Length: 229
Image (cartoon, rainbow, N blue to C red; front, side, top):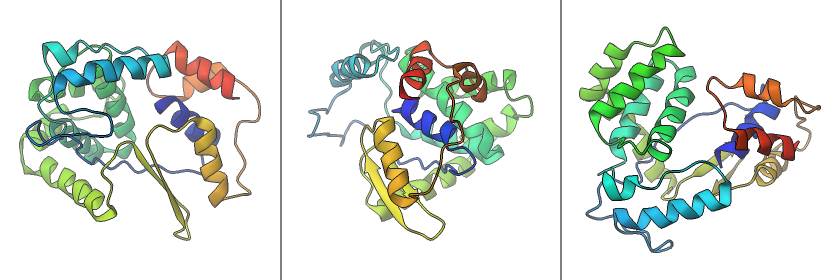
């Protein structure tokens, strides 16, 4: 869904602001069970990721779930909040790096050393990012407190499924979408709240679209943009 969401953010840039909330889908495997998708053990996620690859066309390596499955999603959520605490603009860059690490490079992002290495690599794109402050927040109490606030917010809203998107207008009118959504579905949700909103990009320009993002896009993402525009 990242491809469709990015298209929405690009086409309606200046009209849409994003706030990320980490809900911690997998505290541990001890009590995890997804009856809807018949998931309860790490090995079950291999076929699920293969299915996601077939549907999305995005590069995915599912060997992680056999060789070194993450024990929890909480460490990555905490790490994300530590990066976001330095600057909200850093957050999507780190989130993208986390996704690529686990889904393309089969790296276990529940491991502290992996999370720190991914953060250190951000300096290549974000020269003002402070990896030492990140490490301190990640291994200390601050990161846990930041994540706990997000987790409690999700519990309050009754959000138990990811991804979940909540679109809210300045007047407080909102709509909630859960699960995979196409670009067309996302666009319809925006227009249901703001019928007069207009996209900022009336003409197709894949090169400008690729330059807009602070990380390299896959060819599939550029192709999706080209097809949807």
